[in-house]
Image 1 (tube, rainbow, N blue to C red):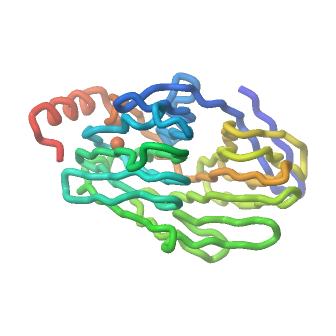
Image 2 (image 1 turned 180 degrees about the vertical axis):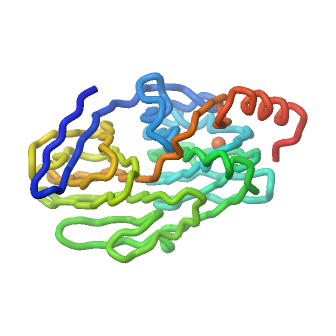
Length: 288
Ligand code: FE
């Protein structure tokens, strides 16, 4: 493992590892850059999946994700550009347009479809899965549709921060989540620095989606570019500086569940028996 760490006056900016995504095809034939949840990077507890869909070729996304089940997780879709329609078995639904977020708690089980609403032009979005802790795996499903107007945007010092979930500079994101998690989308001008202290044993990472940034620039420079994920050590100071004329990245942090993880396609549980039960429940029509 590539562990680098530097400290000054007791404050640590600790980079753990840099990861690259893996190209996969999922749903009915959607081309995805799988950043978390692949054979390269299985998970960063409690983040068990991060998919990037980004293409201006409709063949890459038009097939969408027809009806399928989920159990044991929250699925969070953040649409940067384009439009997706969501429908679920509990009557939840809506059209995700530029800048909107769908925060779905699958809990004990839900069926849903996620289909593109456009047939041409760019589609750019992210789907994140948060693994629910064992005690909450079977909670009631819930759906939250967050419009861009609901998401606070903090501007200053060459930095723009969208707070989808969690706290930043006194602003609270609109998502009501089972698992406490910070989810920000951050834009930096060249030379501007995003700084955030993780004061507990949280896992955190940055996924660069635009341009180039410098990680922990006060101590040393790890230059990271588009499509790279930076995993930090727990309980650390996060520092990211814009290097290119414009750069932008997702920032995520959450407390780990520290529990065994068993995966079976759209189900994420703690044991193989629970995955088998989820598959059985799905085939017996007991999900959704
Ligand atoms: Fe889904």
